[in-house]
Length: 145
Image (cartoon, rainbow, N blue to C red):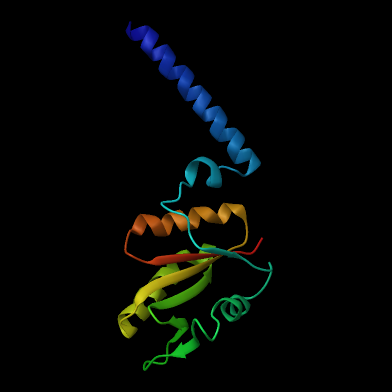
């Protein structure tokens, strides 16, 4: 009985490894098995290969908030909205954007938010990293690919 169970476990591990290997080879691993979003995020599609300020200008309109709001300590919030202090950054700089959003939130009394600029499908795993923090940061996405 134990041998039969070990054979089944062995086969399932081989199959699991094979599927993971194929997904990694095709580049779908991060958006396939590894990235399971907690919810659907607001995402806008914008032109690729731009600088961060382009996305801030396109996203943070006059009706939505103030761009490059300067705080008393001379730090700059990328977008200061009615309810949120928002930091923009490219996805691979996710940790830096989280730290800045939390700081700006503390300084302004508004909720923290980040806008992650995704430049490829594999950037979605950075969103998962922010989700794991579970610290109330609102996440917006810009798809620039």
